Image 1: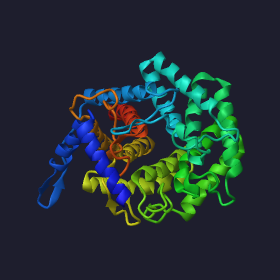
Image 2: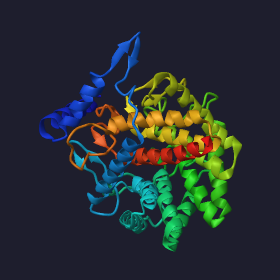
Image 3: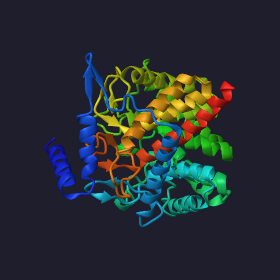
Image 4: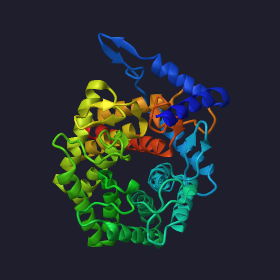
Amino acid sequence: MIRSLFSYVNNFSVSLLFTQERSIVLQDFKRFSLGQKVINNQTINPWSDKIYNEDEREQALTKAVNWLLHSQASMSDAGFGSYHITKKWTTSYVETSGYIIPTLLEYAKREQNEDIIKRMVASGDWLVSIQKPSGGWQGEYIADNRPEVVFNTGQVIRGLVDLYQYTSDKKYIDAAIKACDWLCLIQENEGLWKKFAFRGVPRVYDSYVDAPLLQTYKITKNELYRDKALKNLQWIIDNKQLENGWFKDCDNTIKRNATPILHTIAYTIDGLLECGLLLDDKKITNAAIKSADKLFEIFGKRKYLSGRYNFNWKGSQSIICTGCAQIAIIWLKLYKFNKNIQYLNAAMKMNDILIFIQDRGNRESPNTKGAIPGSYPIWGRYEPFSFPNWATKYFADSLLLEKECLKEAVELSK
């Protein structure tokens, strides 16, 4: 508690007194703390009436992509780092570098941008070069030099599978296969991962590992990958999901496991949804929909989502931007799945909030311009005073998928 308080005092004082990003902190204070109004006992947030047009959405996407590319350019390797207002740039985060590749590859194909494609190939080559002898990839930032971690390994597989499908270069699928073999080898009999799991505890957000296992299965036809993914999915649905859609063992901490963050809740739902759609399995898909619909209901009433939720879906803590973007992606995937326009509308409203958060109206350096913060306001408890690269990655994903869904909606309306 004392350490946490000291950290906040230090971040506030340093950011306001000694950094060029002080305007970001002051702007959040002005927009969030002073921008809220209470009308008829209901809190009206400053983003409540904000609606961004097609051009503004495209500009937001471009700024997000440019920041991700700046993040890569700021590293000493081909990975992607994050920016902290007082501590400045981290080293490359191995896990997120893996799943940023599909985002920027998708954008590059859409824009026919060969330079971005070359940069994603360089990132993939770097990831292959740092793969552990076991087949896994390390946790956290490259400078931390940590052992391999199940979840992080799954996310690197995503990038390598996408690169293989685009380039047909065998080295990417060979590295993915080696990683999948390792994941299968260390899975417990119950279908969970405990060895090499983050903090050594099994967690339901490993459904987001099952999806790349299944992606690799689709390419290799190795039934073991399918069987191991299904075993984990069954463990999650049968043992860890409550009737109301909430998940036990969902947080990325031990102390706050009773109130998991929206970020890991979204990982869990998205993993289930991806796997259900890949396997055409109604039980798995319906498990994802049950949770996604609960958050859809909360968002419809409150017009935003909290950072954490307990077993009764009671929210707490400030907005976690990453989780919001991930939930928008889930609703967009559900729109593509069942063409329920309400999912598309909710996702667009969520993206309006995120564009509002991105659109700070300040003169910013390339280190922050276009980036999404960990929390809103920026001093929220999740990744405070920072711009984690994964927040901007999921924001870009959401805008890309929204554009695709809107095109489908127009076609359906004809």
